[in-house]
Length: 495
Image 1 (cartoon, helix red, strand yellow):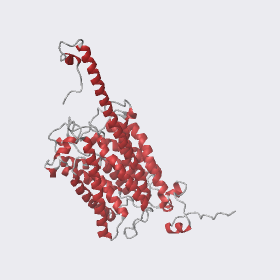
Image 2 (tube, helix red, strand yellow):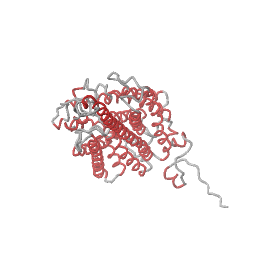
Image 3 (cartoon, helix red, strand yellow):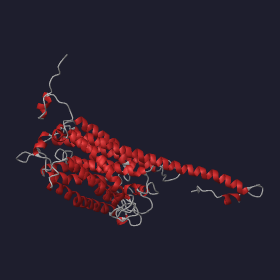
């Protein structure tokens, strides 16, 4: 490729003897070329930064999706509570990720376990990171905390939300993201000095780093708290405690779908990177392909769940379809950039089966998760990691993770078993680390009486007992249907 720099001395020698001031003419021409080259560099930085900021805004919009999904999935008497926890996941997560989390995750140079620079964004911007990168990673961190809040909804004290959210976004999630995403991480696919098993872990947008971490944390919270009152009857049979608004669930699902286009394609962090200079094909093509694989996995999972639930229960259930759709997204998040669209269809199909199976297991184990968050994000996230180890394509792996020719790729694509082995180890270490950190935290909160609310408060609903009133204004007939202890609304006096 031609050089983008210009040397006046070299150029002057080419003018010949008839040029009056060859050196001056060459210097002038080179100045013009260098100015244009600098403008191109500035434009590249601006385009990539704008792309990353736009992706960060999309990922942040998923918080609204989580809020709507959670609100619709709980009973009306706990709407204010779950909405407030979603707001505080973002707010508390923002502060703690700024103070500690980003440094633990990406502070470099560091060891393979944890970062140790850039606390409170010191020494930024730098050649390694700009502020846009922090904002993007913060949006990911609060997404993990939002997953956990769904598992322990309708029965958790407000102070417990603040404590676990700060700990998860300030330490647990950052450490895991350091392992697999930082250039220093022991299992990162970008750690060229020491690639784990010769491949590193390809968890492109976080089936493990985000979804498994949030799902496993929620699993322990829900297990230690126990099921909601009335979730299982005296004989142990499951009793459905349905959410109060399917409309909010669908709204939240579409908002999450929209935000996922920042979550997965945005994880490239830049778009203006040609794979072949001057060609129509470059990183912009990979970004588009990633959006397509994300879409196909979600759509396939939604349709598989639709017909599967019809066979199992005899109903066309929109709530189940929404959860199936999100399960497909959670699964494809790991390999979205390195698999073909046809493979994404397989990913979505299996993700729907995994979610249905884990839901059946949860029911038999008397495990209560109002949003199926542990099953969806933990179970489907784990499948997505395995899927990538099976279907990652050699060409895409080398493009997305350049600098290491001959890197292992998917087992079913002829790349051997090293990548799959690395991914199995990823599942084990994430499960082990989150278990070792979040389980003791929830256990200590339970022992201190800070985790679960009283039976009286749970029966009445936290909106009335903890938040000053219900989210909606009801009339008498609504009170009777919902069984809510509300004050009678007196008729207005006409004048």
